Each structure stands twice: as C-alpha cells, then as structure tokens.
Length: 67
Image (tube, rainbow, N blue to C red; front, side, top):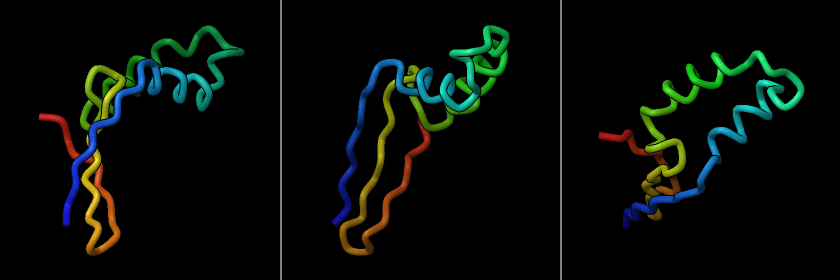
C-alpha cells in the first residue's frame, strides 16, 4: 500500500538553512539562503510544504517533486 502525506511547516526550510549555514551568527549569508531555497523548490512548495510517498509494502519513502 502506498500513502502520500503532505507536511506543512512554515519557515522550516529557512530555519534549517540558517542553522546549517550559520546565518544566525553571520548576516552575509542571505544570497546563500536565496539560492538554496530556490534549489529546494524542486521538492518543497512555498518553502514550507513537502509531499512524501510512503510504501508500506517495501517500507520505503520518497519525496515527491513539485509540479
């Protein structure tokens, strides 16, 4: 059985990128944030929602690309 679930968390991408890039300590990472957010757009809609397809038969999960 396959199940698709859409998760929505406002600012999740922004918070994760800022933590990874160390942007809480550095102000000049805004260009990196914009670039990374754009690249994540393949999977994350509006910077806050993602759809994951779970296959309970094979016990795998795939992040679905946004259309």
